[in-house]
Amino acid sequence: MKDLHFYNSLTRKKEKFEPTTPGYIGMYVCGPTVYSDVHLGNCRTFVSFDVIYRYLLYLNYKVRYVRNITDVGHLLDDGEDRMLKGARLEDLEPMEVAQKYANGFHDMMRIFNTLEPSIEPRATGHIIEQIEMVQAILDNGYGYIKNGSVYFDTLKYAEEKGSYGQLSGRVIEDLLTETRDNLKKQDEKNHPSDFAIWMKASPEHIMKWNSPWSVGFPGWHLECSAMSTKYLGKKFDIHGGGNDLKFPHHENEIAQNIGSCNCSPAKYWLHTNMLLMNGRKMSKSDGNTISPVELFTGDSPHVTKGYSPMVVRFFMLQSHYRSTLDLTDEALLAAEKGYKRLMEGYNNLQNLNGTAALKTELDQEILEILVGAKSDMNDDFNTPRSMARLFELVTKINALKAGQLKLTEVSSSTIEEAKKVMGAFLFDIFGLKDEVTSNADGGPIEGLMDLIIDLRQEARASKNWGTADKIRDGLQELNIQIKDGKDGTSWSLN
Ligand code: AMP
Ligand code: ZN
Image (cartoon, rainbow, N blue to C red; front, side, top):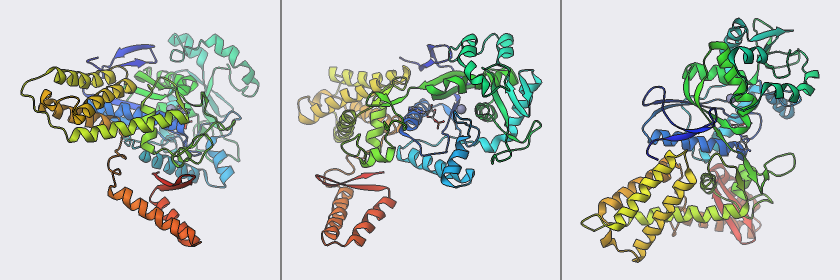
């Protein structure tokens, strides 16, 4: 595909991308709720949007990428605020919980080599904007006040605006029946499908603010409406998140934006699919889960060894962002091999120089692969197909290196183009780092690590536990994990 097209969840169609202002893009992605360690599913979503962001930059758009931090208002099913639960369990201030897990999230994003967003607003830093939006919704007649809380009137909204549920495809009548059982718990609402935009806080609630209606806190959906409007305007280009957020979070965001300013916020909605493990939803409650650190160190019954962050990133890119991704040990082993082959192929390419004077058939084939890699990305950011093209290129590179294909049959301009395009895809667009060739073949890091591991083995053999632990802890501070296994000690970058 020559121009960028992608699937818009709002229209359920693949559409040609046309930014509101030529050359500029405003993109909002729902960020993490920082009440516990970031999990791999979250990482999959943020890595997917990182590649999308990187590709838009590669196409020379000036992108303002806003990804928020949720630090208030995201309630659990039992009605407790996730942040307050975190604070209660860890005996910390809610803001300490937010800081701790936001730091952990940022560390993990760096480990996965994701680019930082242009703006990372926090919900608690935008209470005034959220109160103003609640007021605008009330002024427009789409909200009502009950005992100090404010609710969004979905029935009135659906009647006047023609629909509620366009994004998720939910029909309001179904919603009324689906959620009727919940009504008893939340009987302040006029209709089961209504949702809170401001909640009155109980006296013991810690995170609360003054408002015209009560001392309370904003509903979760409100922060994204208020912060996207503040930083990207009433109408912007792209809104993203995992597909579990389509309903109710994104549906309610749209209703709030239309209800407060009569404009639908984003033109294109992008949703990533879920991460599974061994074919089942990754879930903490039934033990079918693995943390990023466990995956890097191999310290989990679900994997036979540790996998480096770049192998995991490569693994994530081998599936399309709209497909589920099934994490299995076999798939990771295959990804490790694939990643190594790709990096070695790129390294081999650096040592090639073409010599043909004119364009040959082989030139043509290589140039087609390069064009194909881009047209695959233009077709709904198809990273697996684009990656498959790079593997076709590696096959040619390795054949040229081994002499099965002749360097006299390829021109230097084609080889130069291949170096440029493959480098851009691997490092700028896919955001991979070369952990293979810089460490391989007795390179200095590999050699140093062998030495350090030997020294630690010697210390352990002579029961010098202090030194052995000092080495392990010192490496850990440098984000290097070492793991003792049956086949000796291995190391990986955290
Ligand atoms: P949360 O911290 O729960 O608000 O989620 C942050 C982001 O991660 C949201 O965009 C979610 O949709 C996404 N997410 C949550 N679980 C998964 C999963 N298992 N796979 C992929 N994305 C997920
Ligand atoms: Zn959001």
